[in-house]
Image (cartoon, rainbow, N blue to C red):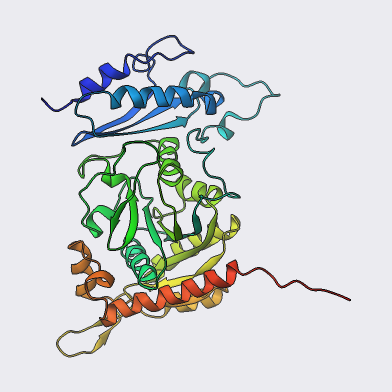
Length: 380
């Protein structure tokens, strides 16, 4: 039997009729971001905002149609709502709400997760974020999740960077999530549950998706994955402070955020922006981590501050948040990360792994304090 092709998928989808336009979903232009990798399929179904939640049966019909193709192993279909192109140029009556206010609504998954309700079976969700890329945020997030697991916490890791997922490389995962029904099963590695869009698409396939499609995929990876039971879900956030970061901060019930920065001034400027975003969305700041803090020469043992030193500590003091600690700049951390064997998993007794363990202990302590209810005051 020959492997299914994109044309096979489009033909299957063409059998699904859009109840509003009367056309099939392909002809109606509702299918976006179609990707096929090793018989695993992902795509988005884009509808106008007013059709959002009511289009769930259409999403399910599309997913089932593709799943029935011989040879298809899994199907990930997300429903996204976006302002219709034709409507964008038309005047809006004054009595109607702004179209821009709806242009980033995400229909699929909203029923399964809210900031108040959270994810069933997940006690706490923390975000590991940075104001800019290139500061080692993903390396910190992976090793932090592994360190929390080593403390006895049931831990998960969500790679929320749709455009540049890092978990497949950092954890050496080439498997595909099983999708024999809902919800999707996370892939376990080194004792933690993980999920990433990188597990579903080819490494070299660019995710040319608009904001609503990205958020649809993120929402599905949060609400339609069998995370439970977890004590802590670590979310490796995309870098920056754009739409994806803001929406996650507003919609996901985050117990706190960890900001990762290097000591250099440029990185700290962006780290301040990330911290300010979380504060504006009322997400507690667990603290700042200074990554690539000190380089220790393997030959002579002398210390070198390549990116400066102490900048994150000073920024934490200035912004009235905790400085959680320093992670050194050492080749072994980079080498183990590139090999898919993170330092905490491959060399748990090393000084480098101990640096992540100390961070995990402090974060677990802070989460425990945050979760502790206030004492009852009884006046007799």
